[in-house]
Amino acid sequence: MTSAVIAPLGVDSPARGLECRGCGARFPLAAQHACYECFGPLEVWYDADSLAKVTRAQIEAGPQNIWRYAGLLPVGQHAADRVTLNPGLTPLVRADALAAEIGLRAPLWVKDDSANPTHSFKDRVVSVALTAAKALGFTRYACASTGNLANSVAAHAARAGVPSIVFIPYDLEPGKIITTAVYGGDVVAIEGSYDDVNRLCSELVETDEFEDTAFVNVNVRPFYAEGSKTLGYEVAEQLGWRIPAQVVIPMASGELLTKIDKAFEELVSSGLAVAPEGGWKVFGAQSLGCNPIATALHAGTDVITPVKPTGIAKSLNIGDPAAGLYALEAVRRTGGWMDYASDDEIRDAIRLLARTTGIFAETAGGVTTAVTAKLVASGKLDPDLETVVYNTGEGLKTLEAVAELVGPTYRVRPSLKAAREAGLLG
Ligand SMILES: *Cc1c(COP(=O)(O)O)cnc(C)c1O
Ligand SMILES: [Zn+2]
Image (cartoon, rainbow, N blue to C red; front, top):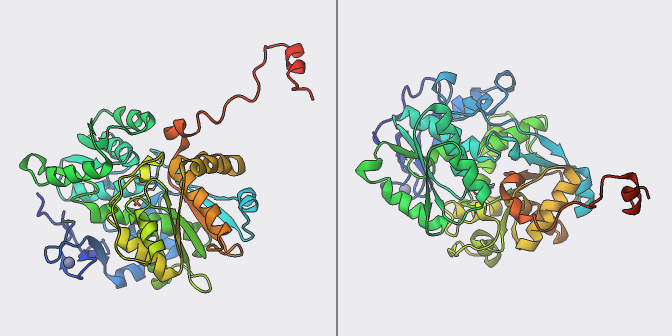
């Protein structure tokens, strides 16, 4: 099972194998996530000529979801082979009022990925990972999750009619647990942090009993990670095949940030999109309660010291981030920066985003919005360059973050007299 190779390979997929991000060693397209030579993480590598053959017209004629980019993805070239809720093509919302409040003069956009089927960007990565898992012959779907991934794996498995088992920290928000368990798969609440959950899953995946199980972010992680690229492709297409000058991205493992940057590079090198003058800059957002990547950047080091996460931005609470080094590399190479926000700043920013755009984000969206404002205030974000902020999740899943801060403006008995007394008529 785990030695199976995705077939038919080389016919329609532009992917040619897996490549070590550390030493460059290459392996077949299989369920393998670590390098046999140096234990570094593996990434899908593509045939550059195949990528270059993809045209804007082909993409634009494709379905209204991530699969319009199938020519740039490792799997899913044929609709019948996909395990998917058809996520993607979420709104890119012009945010003039937010820009004015935080001091940006150039256009500001919010890429609102809460509009996906299970209301976070994780539907993108799960669709690609599970389509690979099906091709590799796996018969059960699993993940180690900070919440949104569990939602998405459970829902995809339900749609596909395949059993699922998801692993989460026991103290997740009730909204994340309910919206996972409702799909009927197994939900295992672990008495520990996400990093404990992840370690356990790395051990389970090696057992005979889990040999038939694809953990989307463990044994098929290289495919999972590629799904994040669609958040880069879409923004460029929605801007008329232009790459924005500045992007602000929330970080948990740091993978999403590295893949949006990779997507921009692919679009430019294959001639599909135009880079801004002076290139694009990538900015990363974390919370004060879990900021190991931003702390390493601020300290000017490549050593990411794991932390024990705290705070309300639970979906981003990965204390030992697997792609942290690569996120640092992308931010340094492009001339971006990272910062982090406290719980109170996150709560304020959720309300700021809601009040100025009509988008109700989960805590991760609060993190990104708060950090965007900080980066403008500190001069790291250029207020005169076009900027895209990624909202990756839905506020309804983390209601408790703002529950005590908002409520009815008035409480009035149902009579005109009472309405007048309450001041509703001026
Ligand atoms: C998982 C997640 C992220 C970050 O993902 P990484 O690729 O691990 O950095 C961001 N936002 C939300 C809402 C998430 O659930
Ligand atoms: Zn290696």
